[in-house]
Length: 113
Image (tube, rainbow, N blue to C red; front, side):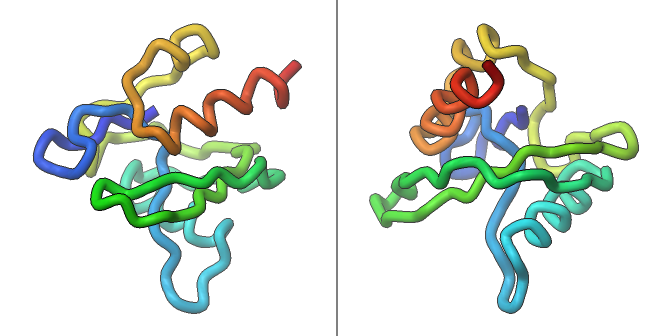
């Protein structure tokens, strides 16, 4: 999990790392790029997880496209976040998160069981 910078939208909340998709980029390629830029690691993207509808801070609808991560090469660094942490399901469900990330977290027990 990555803790958003205090000065940004949803500052101080925890989120699943990721970001916006650039023109011509697939969802998986965007995730690979974002992890490289934000945490200085290379990842192998696995299966897509169920899409999640969310709202931005100005109430604009968006769809989140989460994926399983099959491999992480390197040691994650908090380049754009206040902190990073690994979280098991009980810890994950206790973290303050934006609504979209909470919705993703809610699907995980059914996917890992």
